[in-house]
Every structure is written in structure tokens, then in C-alpha cells.
Image 1: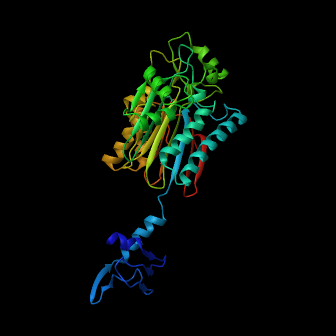
Image 2: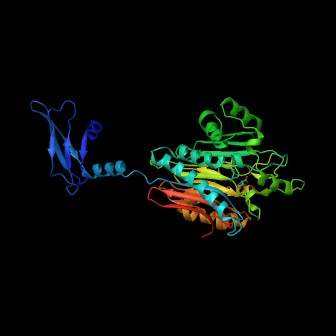
Image 3: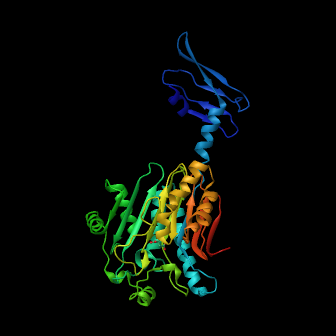
Length: 382
Ligand code: ASP
């Protein structure tokens, strides 16, 4: 009865009810152009049959609230990163800087368009990350760094904050878009985290194209690897002190329904061996989402981000200390992770669309766009 009544009522922006269609057995419709938000309540009488009436008490506040929810959809927003590290102004040519900004912009706009069209935050982060994976500029997908064996092993994760569903893959080779494989783990398997050969079998079973090694070949990254291949060193892609190609990618988004999501994808560290896995595919370390707090995607020295359980730490500071997303993210990046000498950064969003993008390195490839009309793309500290 109540539901039927509400569905058939109309409220003007000035608070007037201009028409009530009637409940099935009610023979009479009602018009009241005087009804406004200022009035406390209104009793409506309806005639069911001869001499049988019923009344309904209408509270204007309820209508006003429903209207706000319906028309003012949640602020939506997206943020992306392409890795943090030793990004010093002046070390990169203006042309290369433009290429990075163009690639960041394409990813940002593609993800934002998904949100603008009413798509989910999960679709938005997957779309944005796929584009970054397809670019040779970033250490993920096509641009992944070389392992000690001269191969490419990739990791990725995706998580949504409404039901806390998540999917992750690690030590995969030849997959064009690792983030989509992680999405399939989340959507199509009973599991959260698949690694190595098993993850590859799952990829084949779920129809993912396997690219030949040539697809991932990149001269700059090859030279980067040759420089350290015979040593015991492994190197963050973004820590090269010369013009080079920098790392790990990620996206966080808040959609029009206030649902948030995070995705992260990486080729890991140059010259990594022994099946080394970083923070990026680890739920809670490099990637996390919870509608009650925030969605986070990290970049930096994975070993420290694992030990700091960084993404979840940001969420915990919000949940248990009541910090805002900006304060929580800043506390973790500028204090807590620094205490254990961790370098890197993160992007985070809360369920109101507020974004934070702190880093404790010289720079971080990053961008954000909100439904309030703010757009930002940057590389260095500002
Ligand atoms: N966090 C990544 C890893 O340790 C690397 C990066 O962000 O650049 O695998």
C-alpha cells in the first residue's frame, strides 16, 4: 500500500504535490497545489466504496528526501596512477612528458566516461587500467619489465567495496590485460587469488588471449634489465635516475551509486627472481576497497607495502580513528610507511567521491577527475 502510494505520487521542485494517482480501489484522485515543504503534514482522505473511507498521513520531509536521493546522484570520481618514483623535473624530454600526460588523460577520460554513463566503479577501474596496460610507457601489461630470466611476469588485482568481492592473479605471462583476468577470477571463480601455472590454465579456460613474448618487448626496458641482469640486484622500474619508463598502474573510482572499487596491475621489479611477488596483487597491501571507508591502489617498493599492509592501513585509520580519506592516506604515506623506509605512493577515493593521491617520492604519474568538474593530471611534486 505504502509503496504503491509513493510510486504514484509526484513532487515539484518547489515542494508542491501536483498529482496523486490513486491506489487501485480508490475511485478518486487528489490535487493539492497548496501543499508545500513548510507544512508539517497533510492528511489525505480517500473514498473506497460508498461510506467507506481511509486516510493517509503525508510527511513532506519524506518526499523531499526521496527527491534529493533520486535527483542528486552521488558525486562520482576517478583517480589513476602510473607509478611513483624518482621522477625529477628536467630529466625527461618535454616530448616524453607529453606522451605520459596523453596516456594518463586517455585512461582517465575512458574511466570517467563509464561513470558518467551510469556504469559501475568496477567497470570504470578495469577500463582505465586496461588502457594503461596497453601503453608501452608503464610497467604493466605491454610495458612490463624483464625478470631475471628475461621474461615478463605480471600481477594484478581488483576489488569492489560493496560486497568486498575481489580477484587477483600473480606470476602470469603473456596475458595482454592482467586486470581483466583478475576481474574474471572475481566474477567467474570461487577463488580470490590464482598464481602461476594454475592462473594461466584459468586464463586459457576463460578465453584470455595469450600474446607472444615479442608483444612485451621494449628496448628501454631491455637495456634497463641488461644493466643489472648479472647482478643480484633487482630494481623498481621507476627508480632509474635517467630518462626511462616508469611503473605500476592503478585506478580507484566512486560511481553514481556510491560504490567504490580499486584495481592495480604491474610487471613488478626489473630482474626479479624466485617467483617474487609484490604488493600489487595482494588484497589489503597494494589494493583494497570497502564502501565504508575507501578504495586504494598503491605503487612503490612492494616489500615495504606488504609489510605495512598499506591499503588496508588507510582503511583502518578511517574506520577506527575516524580520519578522512586525505588524512588517512597522508598519515600512511608520509609517516607510517616511511618509518620502515618504504618509498612510493597511493591513490584513494571514499564513497563520497573524495580523492587523495599522496606520495613520498619525487613524483608519481597521476590524474583525477570528478563530477564536480575538477580535473588534474600531474607527474612531479607541486
Ligand atoms: N609495487 C610494485 C611491486 O612491488 C612495483 C611498483 O609499484 O612499481 O611489484
